[in-house]
Length: 385
Image: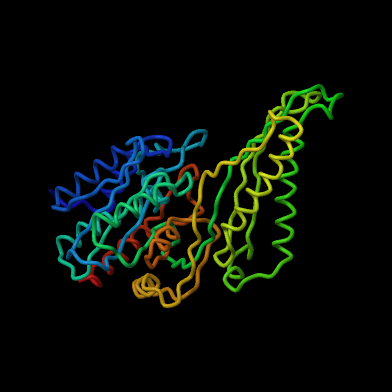
């Protein structure tokens, strides 16, 4: 089988509409087949209903200490966006490659697949691995089972480069996060009989006010040295949407909203989550004491550990040597790097493209960025050899 160029691989990957709500198996099957055509065995890690799969593969000597190139296969929807070209076809114009996922993050995936095949044929002394996940866009939920599956199937890697778009600048830290779906159940009566009912909207507002008060306390409190590197330099709790009620003169039977927390690495994500759960439980008991039908339920829908800057970390040293970037970079969004770090890998974020283009209509990656990523991979292979 002929080796494809990174551009050709990118065109194949973008052609698969792997929106998170859909299966990614067509893409996984193509990658698996392409690698097999070059003598590389790939492994699948299935989700619970086998509608999606993560994929990982190993090239080079069957020893520990591999460099792992980590990316995700899912993309965000294009529904309602005004695209000027087919989002599922890579279109070049004005020095840019347009298409859903070209930036976030099939551009990096294509480069990683190219690098694995090139490394396999070139011969390398230190192994190289790729890890392609599913459902990153809906809370990085595919990464933990993928990482767990890798431990039993391939030699343990030591260094992970997560290729989220960073314009090939090194990112050594990012905030962690978690999110909760909250359902406040009330009891309907006419609003003139307010004390006999339970307004889910008004009671839900108590929880939201608790979030406001906690934000105030966090911002007024001390800040850690790592947190000070971020913008904003502290943990934040946020409610972006709320729905509930049926009429202005009826106590609301239901109120639903989502809470997200973005936590700096030197803060305690678990403590913030536990405090919110405790407050929700306190309100649940109070409402049930008034009406047994009422109450509060809380369900976590994502959890992303922070990426903590490492003192002398192997991933940081490798990427700095390959890019020449000696700056310090942190971001407030989350990636799968924190999951790898928690599993015992040294991890950083570095990839082609600009995060500002992610999720946008007419998403693109600049050709110069894609070529810079290609240069990074060539230097990586030389280093591994």
